[in-house]
Image (cartoon, rainbow, N blue to C red; front, side):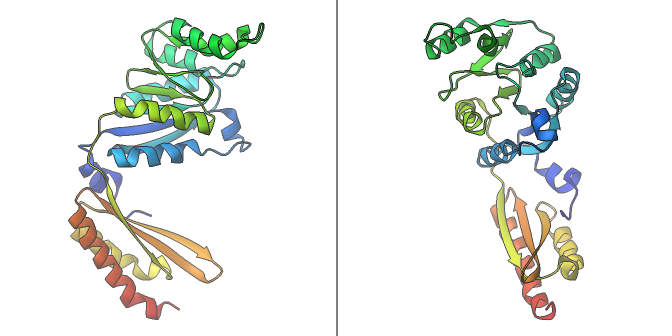
Length: 258
């Protein structure tokens, strides 16, 4: 667990752009499908210096999507949604986004053309597939070279597909539109020790380096307890100094932890 609250250490770092992820889909909440998109978005944002601050999951319910979007988009620089923009009846994200922004939604001529070019056999581009070309008024398309069906951006909200491969391609399209921040430096020290042995010492290191977020993430394996100790911050030297102090604590404690 982190040794400083987000309101202190991480909050002090946030001259950077911030972001939240909104995952849409009953299949995620039911456990039928495992969410991998939030982790991929986190890894995408880190080298851009954009701090991912929150991840939410909501079902295929328009009211819940609207409420989550309105709460998040007023709080963070960017919102990334995945899921719910396909051709089936339960794909309602585009309509919910339009409602959240108070705008209309209709078929987008460029989106229709992109999809029509993909479904070139007579009858393939049916009414349900045309639903994927319905875009809120004022939104900009996010291209998709995998399946042609676009996502879209409206304001600070980026609406992407739920299929991981397609979502990744959309992220590549989005990257040039984002404002960069200062990259977060990180050092991880793995110790074969129970975290309770060094908790008090870690708290002292955190107090010594308030601009560095120090996290303790325990695990258990065949060889017993272990912990990953992570130091993160904007200033590379401060992170390095904090990590050296942590390493010294581990060296002193490990012989007595068996």
